[in-house]
Image (cartoon, rainbow, N blue to C red; front, side, top):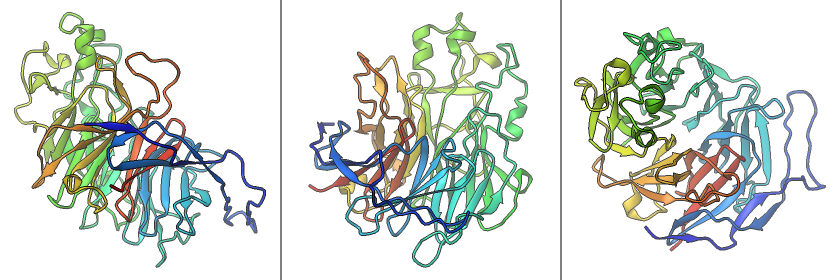
Length: 426
């Protein structure tokens, strides 16, 4: 795919506020709105011919997933509190393509965020909650969200709770495993059976319109899912898709079976189409993209060659190891060329050091609800450096995706808190 370095069409948020910033602070629950000046700069993020990219916001902190409402408002959830707040609302009040208002709210950091019908849904690392929207699509009460589900396990690692909602008001929530391969503490042996699967390492289904649920009210929809930060509901196939983080530690724990190079190349970060009761196979098996087979994990008697997982499903696509898929989105807009319609964009948060590639947004073409070709690089160079000969720090790590009301694609990154907007205007 041919990529281009874009001309000077980007915009950023100025680090300081304009003198005319507006503050409305009548009481502790009043809104604080900041008017922001935007200045043109250049970005080296690359996209295919005919596409353009601009920065619509920056320096927002560790933003994770994004949501865009029908009126064009942008919401970003953050992994850490900044000045005591987690979620950012960005508004373009005069519809000139530039952000002119910001608001910060919510006191629990997290990852997931979604606008669905008359609510804004968001997640912390242990709960999912929602805010009622008015007829204009604005949040009615920023200070008193309703709790949908609470008490989900949070052990500090791989604890994001991304979620999606289907057309029947079911909400699907990832509960990732904090134990990379379900090993016994201080050992290379696997826990037999892996009891973590009782409350993590899977995707649970709840009701999106029912308040005050706990894990006991939900149903384990799919198991053996180590950590799926990138999930989306496909309204064409009416099925759930998840791009799953793979495990590691092959060479560290089993040098008799794996070389350091194999450790860098395995296992695949795999994309699955999930239905109720499906088992992806973690921790007992992993997917080897070179052999195109499910391989028995060494913690459970494998040696890198023995196949396993007879009851586990196969992926529909496989990406390089350690790419860290952190969001995915089925494109349903009309702005992009027809080949992108109903295909999947995937945001990758890390790199594969053997391939010298990563920190990119990929595209998987779909036809009739199934991948119809190999994945391809759609938008690249978020790292801002040559990964083959790195000098200097990584600049951006793609983490969140959202589709705007006109079919534009938003990409958020959680290193410097930048939001990019990609449009097509050929």
